[in-house]
Amino acid sequence: MSRKTTKKTYETSLFFGKDVFSNDIKSLLKMVNEKVIRTKRTVKIFTPNPEQLVLAQENKKFSKYLDQADILIPDGIGMVVFSKLLGKLKKKPSIKERISGVDVVQKLLKTASEESWKVLLIGGKDYDKKLHNIYIHGLSKEAKLSLLWSPGYEKVSSPTKEEKEELESLIKKEKPKLVFVAFGAPWQEKWVIEHEEALNKNGVELAMVVGGSFDMLFGKLKRAPMWMRAFGLEWLFRLIQEPSRLKRQLKLVKFIRLS
Figure (cartoon, rainbow, N blue to C red):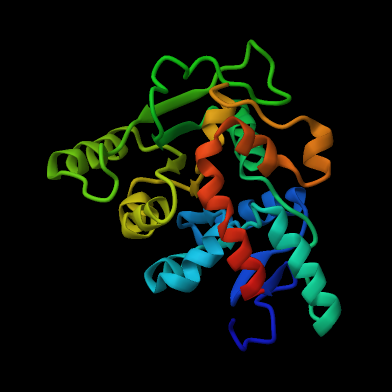
């Protein structure tokens, strides 16, 4: 863990050497808006969870990607629990609450619909037939959302020259206001960092990595009921739907040891 002892701003807490956003989702959205206005550059939001923090300890390149984000949101209940525990033991600021990536995406899409912003989703599978069947809390059925989708690359670890050019041309042509990247860690973070200049040049105001958020928004995966979310058990609900995630969940043991 880092020897840093101070947090970057009043709204972040230092955890695993990373400045993680520590306020509520309303404050997050306000902060995003202020950063867009103040910097006039693409705001980069990454969503680390315990598994990814373990990966960052093992993969220095991924760790550097996380460091280059404008905002890191705590998308994992384990981060909040252990941050509060360490906060009490070492009398340091802790992460106040978990902020789910899918909740942030929903709110951003709601704003995009209301403001008629163009949105580009990169990555994921078979989304082309679901673009008009997306559930956004608080959005009426009559509302229109300009959501475009590109599968991105067949193999995110080794994209072809043609795939890269096609995606770059799409961004240049459409000039979306928001870009969501669903390649999975560390590839989605890598893509955002490596394409930051192109995103800035084409007027993208926010780029956010989203993992499997759109699988839930498109109904490919069911989201945990509210009571499970309240008790921090959303990870368990998803594990039941995707047993193949068990190996990834076992990294929590290493996360606890590193904490």
